[in-house]
Length: 197
Ligand code: ATP
Ligand code: MG
Image (tube, rainbow, N blue to C red; front, top):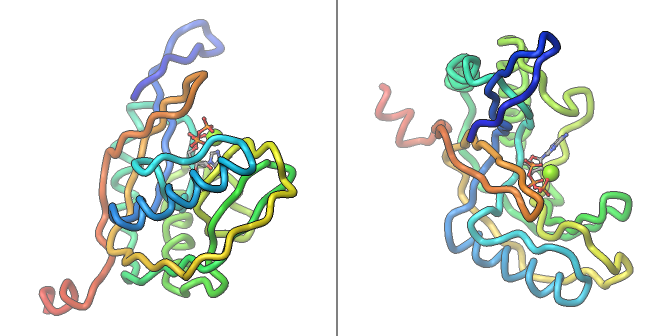
């Protein structure tokens, strides 16, 4: 998970490229990667694999390994409710050549989770990418789309229960990024709240 980066004084520091995300259960991941495969067959590009389908909550980028414990601690302080995520439409960003799935009604609990996470990370002095922009939840299904005029599919909505979020490290290579889960954080479910009484 680590990479070595040169520093200004000529030394080397080990870093990890990290982000926080929601990770779907296997059936939802399979369904979404099937949609991605079919779209990529028509439109070209690189379909997201079943094992890497996710929704990014906060992208941090390179972090020194010695700061990872602080990062994990900051996320542990986030208190947010569990919710169901319903993906019910698709879109294509022409400028980024990305085909994605999103929700027409964003669950308030998802907005609160992303906001609480962002706040906790910034309070711990981590830079969150796009922190000034509104959070736009989406699942990237195909990258580097070749034919942006391709008709978007029309599928029945897909829901997945979100009861935890994860911290992931990403190792970039010329071919594709390899992800590794490094921590998992529960969201508050009714069962959990009752258990705490
Ligand atoms: P590749 O870059 O090889 O296409 P990838 O985008 O899956 O692979 P990363 O670049 O490590 O891998 O990104 C991990 C996740 O974070 C992805 O969901 C990506 O869309 C998101 N992400 C990456 N960079 C940013 C950024 N600057 N701002 C917001 N989200 C980002
Ligand atoms: Mg990327």
